[in-house]
Length: 600
Image (cartoon, rainbow, N blue to C red; front, side):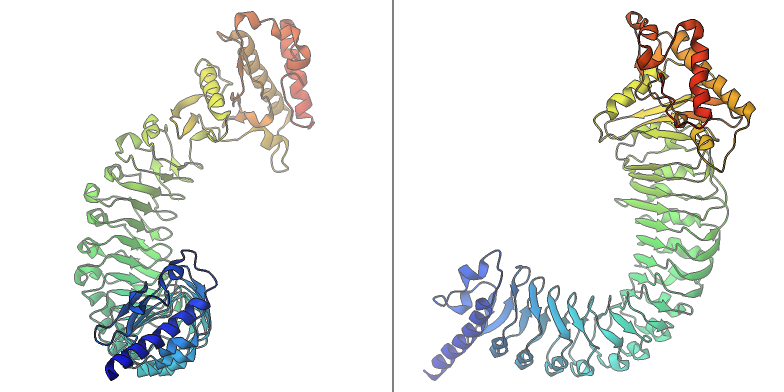
């Protein structure tokens, strides 16, 4: 009877603590607790609870991902048999009640992704059986309490994305059972404690996005169980200890955005059989790319951009069959790009970036074997030759960015077969592309009109169409490159000048183009958008008329339109045609506003 009474008393105590939480709930959008947590039902049948089999006390409480808005009541400290408390991913707020320190049996505590605030409580140190403490993604302040190091059983400590200040305590290595230490996204300063090398069971260390200084401790390379080592976006200096590259179990090495210097060991991948990601961008590393890269057979991410590497880009990269991201831009690599055995790369979506780095060569045809290539960034290099799209088997390509190189030749018609294409950038080369905004209702008609007009035109003063692309998602005209830009640039800029001879020559060119359109085409053409920006100048300053998007083709029955609609089109009898064109052009060249409309 005494045992039964004690059991009922414990249930009542637990029930009161939980009902106290329910009574303070501000928002429960799913109404789970309204329906389940009823005084008329045994507490062990309430949703989110698990009771012990012996005395029927609440041992596990899991209210994660319920979008609850509430504070933790002080009565929670009466859940004396609680072993696991998971309140993650809700909107719990306010300070943590000190009464939680009474939960001496607690082993698992997850309060992550909430709105808790205040200093990190020092009373956590009284929870001597705690194995997992997750306070990530809250608004905790203050420093890391020294009392934490009384929790000798602690295996996982997560304080990510708070506003914790101060230094990482030097005694952190006394937590000999620690497997994960996550302090990312805080305001920590100072250096990485040397004592960390004593935490021999450590598998994950993430102190990224802080303001840590100093060197990477040599002893970190002795943590043989390490799988994830992330110290990104800090202020670390010095070289990377070569011992780091001897941790055979490591999967991710992430040191991006520091001030690390020195060289990478040539045998970097000889001791890293399961390495999946190496992030070293935005440092001051120099030397050659390691020759052993092909030995990292599981490598998915290789990010070396924004350093001072030189020498060749290793062709062995093409042997990395699991590669997903290759960033090597903004270095000082020399020579040509060549990817050996690129067809063996089988990742679902591959991203490659070689910007600001290649000094010579052509786009290798081996890239065409990367069937899952999704993004190719090669801007501002010195790449020459043509674009070998016709050799490519890359139907998944979404981004092709090649601006400001020395590419020449034709843009292949096969580019229209890239049906997933979202962004095409080839400006700054020797091709020009007119791309239509397909979200505008008139774009389809404009494109079709321009194609219909241009395919029938052939004149030295009308811009030449090289090819076109047309499908439901992408429409473009590839035009002959005009290195001197448009007439508008010369008429309305203080940086360019036309002498009288050039002005006269351009007027004649435009007049001849218009005369051809009106009199010598199989069907007369009204341009309908004559203005200086649509007059392009080649390398010899010869004018070429362009942009026929709103042109009108006239049939035989519309021929009289020339002389009957003077106010609209501005044309006079055929005998005075050139004179009229000259008057319009002279007005423009005298810096009246650029309305060079036919008929103005």
